[in-house]
Length: 324
Image (cartoon, rainbow, N blue to C red; front, top):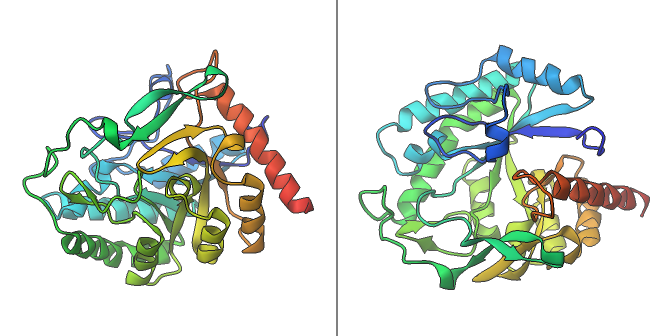
């Protein structure tokens, strides 16, 4: 990563028994010591500092924990038994991150287990590369409510539970000096799927999330790909949220909900240079992350080759933005 010009590293936590956003060839690497996180096991300050020093040895900055996995918020989302333990664990994580000098905690509020995030993993894109895709027509029935839930939930209920979470954790984040960054639901646009409301489906929902419990410790993990999936004007979205952007997922798709395919940065729906110009215009100077990338010939599951190409593309966009 250092050789490719990467500056910041976000870590995805893993835990046995919980879904986490990690790739098999990463999780199963022999001798690897992953950041484990669960309500019963929150990384200590010492463990976080150990990772910070590891990255620093390579000229990289430990920028934050990329995302809370569902095992850290699912019970809060539906006000179930286990809610208090999850809230307490998030508070402890925030305090430990702050004490270790790590200033960002990304999170999402996706109702996992309702539908897959994508309906295909082998859609063909440029040159025969493979990418993930979503097509509503390919859904093989969605139970209502979702299999793991005992009933359907109203949107009002889900907002109440979410806002209660913010009221509990944001004062701790403020005290710790950590910014929390909310990711939209993916795929976006749907009011509900499987009897479960999808709160963060559009820009208006982000507005409500930020206004519910106003705090300088709360902002957005602005996923440009999700807004591209809605067919949004990406520079306008960036200008809309401005100072509330904590970090950016820079990815794109071809097509929009109800059917789209992930693709390379240089052939998606929006103009990537215009997006970078908008970030400069609003004064954003935080991390810009790669997200989903296609699988190219000879790649690993983590897609090292494709990520190297995409990292170089981002470096050129950033340098061009600075010179414009």
